[in-house]
Image 1: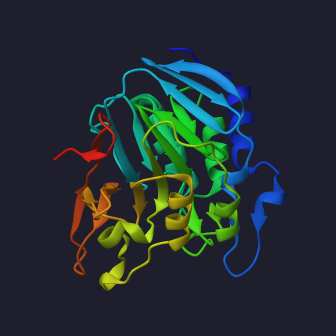
Image 2 (image 1 turned 135 degrees about the horizontal axis):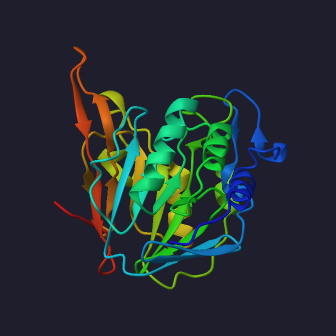
Length: 290
């Protein structure tokens, strides 16, 4: 496996979201956040396992056999040794909530295998930058600042963080505005295209319902998907303890990536160990493996 020297990995982490001094990416107000969409990824090329990664501008191309991926969110105490085998993993938030768990989780993911990191509103960008700088491994791919991922015969639009910063845990969480999404511009899709977002769009239907069935979907993500030709996607919030999908009449498939780690599910403190979503990428639509 080809490794990136620590100084290059740190540069990539710093450039990705501006956590190392990019004050122009910070938004103040009632719900402060960092505009992780518009960092500057480091252009680079490397290999990890059987996959080849290439970052050009804001596009990440992943070459190699990826018939399926495993997607999940994380809790601070999540154990990583028993994660299912897959050519590639996608972590949708929960890996940088505090300093101790960020170091442990990112270090563990680096040992597990190639993993795409999409921060959620609960992740602290400064803690994420610091933890990435300590991981001397090319297996972790920070999606902050990446606008298009080409993977497994599909295209993905990564949208990290919380809409308007509303669900961010602190001032350094990733977030975005409707205007930020409007500013995203991509060429016409060459392959089936989907959202890869922490927050679910309203089109995700029941997957976009929070506590007591309250709808918390983000309409601006629906607008983005329609404008850029995305159909369905993978989402990490609202949280679920098991993998669930929703296929509306338009033929799109939305998948809720569940939490991997202890999840409280009852008022009496009862909990479950959560799970992962295994998705087949063969064909033009997403397919959740049962």
